[in-house]
Amino acid sequence: MVMTGVLHDQKSGRRSFPSDKLAMLRKHPYFCDLEPGAFDQLCRYAKHSTLKRGATIFSKGDPGNSLFAVISGTVKMSISSPDGRSAIFNLVGAGEIFGEIAVLDGQARTADATANTNCEMFVIDRREFLPFVRSHPELAMKFVELLCGRVRWTSDQVEQVILQNLPGRLASALIRLAEKHKLEPGDRTIAVTQQEISEMVGMTRESINKQLRVWATRSWVRLEHGAIVVLDAEPLQALVEAGSGNEAD
Image (cartoon, rainbow, N blue to C red):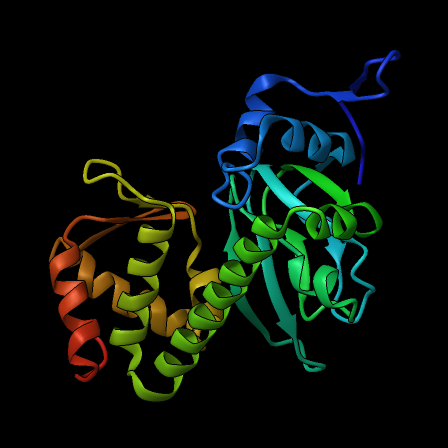
């Protein structure tokens, strides 16, 4: 990772970042309630990093030495099998954090983290972050909430793979991604490729493409290069709630 764009206040020793980058960290629900002094302290621990698309941030089994907060771009959380198959757990976007599990429990990383696009982020060392959390119990509770949210997300994904057919799984993935990034009614473009979607729902890219093209003819979605636009969410939600039906129906 390349550290860039960091200024230092020689008198206080504090790192100084552009206000728009700090705002990305400040508005995160787990840091937004920190007192100004506490937030300033957290910023002193943050290091600025930029990565090129495809760069490995960490691999499964690596020690969990750092917490990451995404400023811009997307990070892919995934695992791979020895025969080359991949499964994507999550796509982490701007304003989100990742790497917290291994940082908090001191165990190895549970997945691979890769820059899915050019990325910019803050990195906070575990040796500084843990004492900070211990001195701010309200932040510790926020991280309990965060981890509970991660468990619910994972449980939902497992349920979909086991119980839902392809249309239900695919519709559920599209709706989750749209809700996660809080897409407005007039802007329902999800920046995800069909290959990435296939690795999320556990089906081949060919099956995903076939189903999306059927939905495109019905004007439920529109396919773009590297993106899927949700035009009509209601029939997709109906597929999720039904949990059954024929592929490419």
